[in-house]
Structure formats: structure tokens, C-alpha cells
Length: 292
Image (tube, rainbow, N blue to C red; front, side):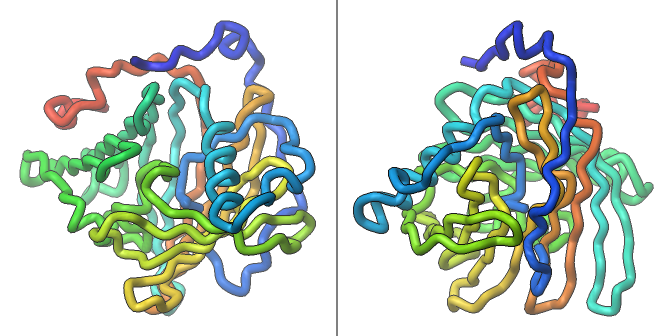
């Protein structure tokens, strides 16, 4: 059953605020945690209760709280600019749109639609995220006029030539990882909780991830990704959070740095619209050819 956003939220003015002074030091750059985390206004308060118990108990408690406070957005759309940089600093850009539909009791439904440049125009990518099983993913390629399924064993591959993998593009579900609280430490002007999470799926491209969450609102600040040989492969940094509808924190910039290739991908987000009138029928494999 789809979650309906409450009338008082829909009637709220789309006020936007900027959270300043919290960029993580860019020794290495890089969102997951891409992606798509929405955070309501209001401090979590003292972290003392969150970190009680064993590291595993505290880690699960923090991860669960961070996920729970993301709920309730119902639906949203946004525009993205994807900037690809090679190791020499040369850049190319892609422009795309995003549609997200919240689903009660399961993961979100997400569609990415590519508008420019011409060689990727019309490409569409659909994700059905799940809590207790691998995500389902499909890619529509207009040149071939067919929909291609991305199996869970292939989701560690590069998403459209970027430093994000297909695995990175889905919503992060607590049930898909084991969690362990490591420590509290400063991150720029904030205090952060540092967690280690280990994917349960044998198909994951990662052995583990280190996640920095700000203590006050549990926003994702940085994620370090380690490959199957436990080498530090990538780092994602989330910058310039803004507050929408007095409830939802959204990042304006997400950067993923690949330390092996020395390439990076920057996602610049704009034009968020919450409570968008989205058709659930557009979030199906059969509809992927016509969703625009």
C-alpha cells in the first residue's frame, strides 16, 4: 500500500533552508549512501541512548533510527546534473530527472530518466528496492528499444559510466546489512557517529562500508566503501543539505571518488518537488519504455 502524505504537509509552503558549515574535509571526496535520504527537522538529541549496549546493538539502533526518520515523504521528483571527471580532470555532463515513490512495508520505487546529451537521451532506469531480498533493476536502452534486467550479480557494475555502481543507486535498507557502532568523532563543525555496515548479500561489490552520520539529525555525511579484498575503493561525500517543507533534509551535491581509477562523479540536485502526483503504473517494467 502506498503511503499518502498528509494534507498539512502538502499545504505547507515549499520553504528551503541551507545547512551551512558542515562540509566534510575533502581529503577524499565522495552521497549513498547515495542517495535519496530525507530527514525531518528536529534534533535527535543526546546520542547517549543511541550508543548504549554492545557495538552491534548500538549500530542496529542508530541505523534503524536513521531509516525511520526518513519515512513519510510519499513521493518526490528532482532534477540532476551528473558530472563525470577522469583522472586528468576532463569533464562530461549528463542531465536527468528522478521520480521516487514511497511504498509502505517495502523499499521505494525509483525511476531515473536521461534527457541529455543525445547519446543517452531516452535512457530510463527503474529500481524496485526491497527490505529482505535483492533489489530488482531494469534499464531501458532506446537504441536497442528493449528493457534489460540488471541481475543482483551484476549490480556492482558502473552505472552509466559513472563512479556510482548500480548497487549504490538503490535505497539503503537496514535489513540488508549487519551494523556495528565504532565511535563518535568531530566531522567539520558537527559531531558524527561512525558505523560499520557489512552487506549480507554475497553479490555485493563491497566487503564493508564506514558511514558517518551527524549526531543531531542522523544525516549521511560520508561513506567509505571497501572492496571484496577489503581495500578502500571509493568515498562518497554529501554536501549542502537544504530543508524542504520544514521536514525533509536533502543534499544539493553528492560526490563519489574512486581511489583506484582516480575518477570521480558529482551529482548536483535541484528542483525538488515533494508530494508530486506520480502514477504508480509508471514504476513498472512494462511501462519503462513510455515513462517520461
